[in-house]
Length: 76
Image 1 (cartoon, one colour):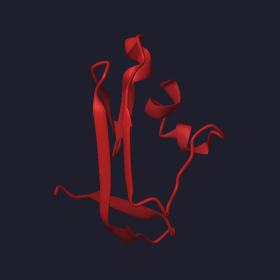
Image 2: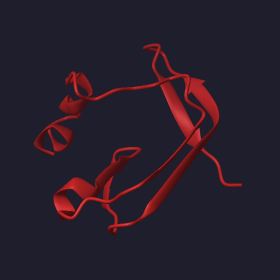
Image 3: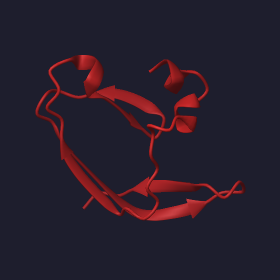
């Protein structure tokens, strides 16, 4: 978590993956310890309850000057 708060250094870590071709993802958080239930959503860190079902759907992407893609979440 220190890397997340340290100017987004976590994005440079080999353990952190960015999958640009994924349009939808769903998972259930089953971790007992709160520290493993923290999720980064567009730069905000949230802690979810054990058993939380997380579903993310990408509606569109916007390319910025450095070539990175900003993902925009939509609701259905």
